[in-house]
Each structure stands twice: as C-alpha cells, then as structure tokens.
Amino acid sequence: MHQDEVYNFNFWPAFSDLMLTILLVIISILFIYITKSLTHYHKLDEIEQTQWKIIEELKSEFNLPNDKVSKDTTSCVFRIGDNDSFFIDLSPDAQRFSFGGQILFKFAQDTLSVQGKSILWKIGEVIRKNQEKIEEIQIQGHTDTTNKTNITYEGFDFNLDLGAKRAMRVYMYMINESGFNPDEMFISATTYGKHVPTDRRKAEVKTWNRDSTNRANESKEKRDLNRRIELVLKFPSK
Image 1 (spheres, rainbow, N blue to C red):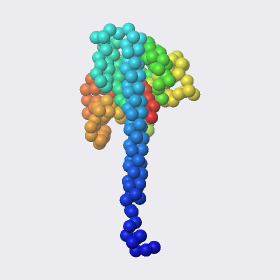
Image 2 (image 1 turned 180 degrees about the vertical axis):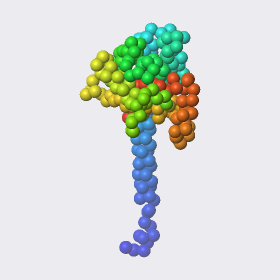
Image 3 (image 1 turned 180 degrees about the horizontal axis):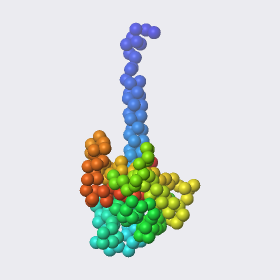
Image 4 (image 1 turned 135 degrees about the vertical axis):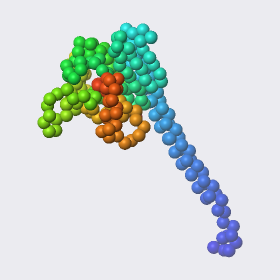
C-alpha cells in the first residue's frame, strides 16, 4: 500500500456506522423497557379495577347503603351491624379482608357462628364471580395473647392452635359451601396465632419481639382487632 493511500484512509464511515448501531440498540432497549412498563401499569390498573368491582358487588350483596361503607384510596370498611364491621385493604397485588372481634367466631371458640356463615357465603358468591381474575386465596388465622385453656404441656400454644382451627373452619366452608375447588385454584389456610397483631402489619420498624406483641395487646380494643381471620385474595401482577 502506498503512503498516500494510508493517509487518505477514510475512518468516518466506519465510525458513523458504529454510532448508528449503538443508537439503534439503545432505542430498542428503551422500546422494550417502555413496552414492559406500560404492560405492567396496565396490569396494575386492571387489578385495581377488579378490586373495586369486588367491593361494589359486596356492597350490593350485603344490601348496604352508602353511609354503611367507608372508602378511601387503599381501604374500605363495611359496617354490617350496630357493632360489627369488617375491613378491606388494597395493595397492588392483593386484597385483604379482615374479620375481627366476634364477627365470625364467638370468643375463644372455633365454630363458625350463624352470622359468620352468612358473611362468608356472601363474600364467596362475589369472589366466585371474579374467580378468573384471582390467582390465589389465602386464609390466615390470628389471635390476641389471651390464653383460655388449662392445657400447659410443653410445646402447646393455645393461640396458634385456635388460629389454625379457625382458619381451617373458614377453608372448609369455602370448599364445601361456597364451591371453591383447590384442584382448580390455589387456596390455603394457615395460622399466625398471636404473633402478627395488627400493629405489626403497619409497624415501620423492622424489629419486633415479645414485648412488642404484649404492647400490641394491652387494651381490649387492640385485642378485638387482633382476634381476626384474614382472607387474602392474590392477583397475578405479571
């Protein structure tokens, strides 16, 4: 190669082609990212619409006037009697029903009350209408720190046992009476006993110990809220 041919070598076309390739790659990555983000936001919007649709259908099922249902952007309270209410909390991938006090069970008992069965029947009817939108149903048994038994053998935890029995009562009612088939959708029952009071769910601090649990049960009002069944509807967010 002659010396003048070396000095006349045009580097710019190769460099511009490289820059164009990089630009196209960046544009492609941005397009994929934006498309996935829009799909995700659309899915979250669809979940939120389903959650509020369930709330409106429950309002109709319970035949409640507007003043018996309190709502904000992430929660709802259903007042179904003079002293009975249940709560619904909304999050991007779940809808949590909380039945506290004696709304489903009498104190320290694990047999569903007549009112409890009526409530679960109405809720089951609404959930079944929206079943194709729901990925999983979780039934969680929670209690306060009260121990209403004389059983003291090592390893026995009255509240853990009570939470398990209550969760299973609700589970069996949903299967046998409401018609949910665990072979067709995920449905489970578990117990937390006294270990997840309502204060712990909303606690901003990560550390929690026995003293924290005792403080969360120091008043009758707190204990009434802690004695609860939580029915959690999980929605597919992807």
